[in-house]
Structure formats: C-alpha cells, structure tokens
Length: 210
Image (cartoon, rainbow, N blue to C red; front, side, top):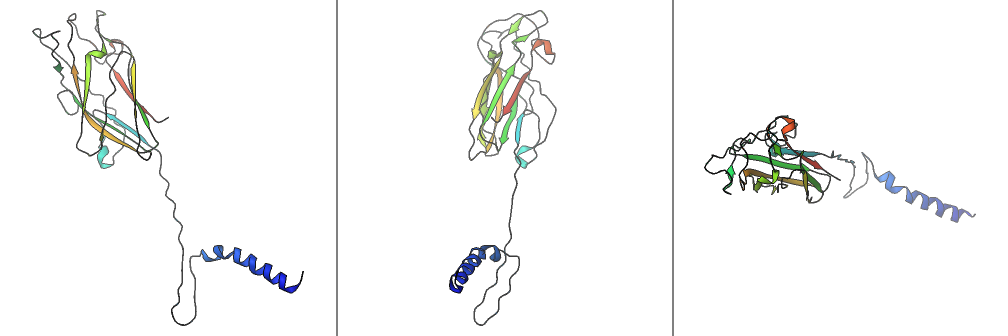
C-alpha cells in the first residue's frame, strides 16, 4: 500500500466518525467572520400504559385524577301497583348523578378496548322469582368533558361486550348512563337483586385491552 492510498483510507475512516464527534455537549470554534458553535441534548419520554374505567362514583378523571374508588352505587326501581307491567318505563333512584343516572368513563392508551357488562343470572327475590336483566335499559348521553360519548353494553343475564375504537391508540370516552326499568310484564311481588350475592343484583363492568 503506497502513502497516497493509506492517506485516503485514513481520511475516509475519519469522515465516518464525524457524526459521533459532532454530537457533543460543548464545542469551541475559532476564526474570523461569522463562526458557529453547537451543542446537542438527547431526550427520551417514557409513557406508561394505563386503563381507567368508571361507572358511578369515582375519581375526577377529567382533571387527571385516575385513582381507585371502591364505592358501588345502588340503583333502585319502585313502580307503583297501578303501573306494574303496563310497558311504561320506570325511572330509577340513586346513582352518582341521582335519578338512576351514573357517570361512565373509559380512558386508555394501549389501543382498542373491549367493554363488558356481566351478571350472574337474572335478578332474584328470596322466593326464587326472577326478573331478566333485559328489563333494565341503559341510555347513554354526552357528558360535559368533550370526550366521545361512551355507549353502554346492553344488560343480559350473562354478559355482553362492545369494542371501543382507539384513535392513535388512545381512548377518551365518557357519558351519562341513565338506567330505567322496562316494565313490560307483571311479576310477583318481592324485592329483586340488591347487594346480596345470591340474588344477582350486581352487574360487573370490565374493560380490557387485548
């Protein structure tokens, strides 16, 4: 290898290393006229994956408070004897917004979310009489946060699910869910459901990111 070839190889190797040399936290430049000096800073942002579901009483998600609240609300329907089974929907009482109305919110940043409502069977009284969960209707209305309106899964004696589509892997959806008793048929006197597990008064909402 002659001197000229060796020099060319050395200069080529030096040129390949220039980007590494140029990435510096300080540089000094000398000379006359307009001169420049540069410095670089590297940035990394790590975002955790999260999933938040609220139905009823819960944390103030719209202000950034995503926390666990263990309160479970009770919605009560009490039609009078004159209207039992006449097909006119009966409004509920209770709920964090009162009048049988609950705040519902779903927030996540890991893609589409599957929202499921599950019951362990029909609402039951102590005599063994039952009312199907299809007799409870859920209507979703827009909330005041500007999020997309969260549709409610229809209730059944087993479970139903719906997929909430993410936008750029992010879901921000909420609503005011109004529960009403359909009241389409006469039923035996009794108190159905409630907080006793055997009477199947609990619906469990679950959100999952596949």
